[in-house]
Length: 187
Image (spheres, rainbow, N blue to C red):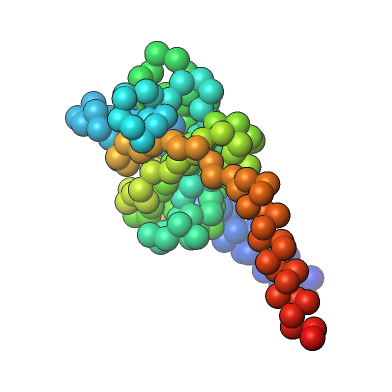
């Protein structure tokens, strides 16, 4: 019995190791697109003045196997733009270990950028996001063949706009309205 248990554990370990290796994807956080300058760039504003992202802008990539914002769960580390890149990110390669996206297969990614705060959701200044874009992930294929890192430069340019924060008077008015409804309901 002990021998069979050890064999089963060894087989499960090998399967887990192979599945884990297949799940690794490697991408380049490079958004410049030599063939099309309208792809990959991030703008500060919606006015169209040409103001581009600088070193106050942070960005992160989200990945998934469905063309749905809610399905994009696997993310990169946070990158910061560097002055002189004209709104394009020139970040280092990074590896994502995921059970959702597999190297060598088709999937989707989205770039989210913001100013102020440690994440897109906690941004206090401006924020924006690219369209969800189809891509073939780099990393390891199903046959464990290594693929070169893929640049994340297929999304169109997008704007970073001011985060909408309700004014205190609006919040107070909403609370008074809710209180009024509660009082009325109790009567």
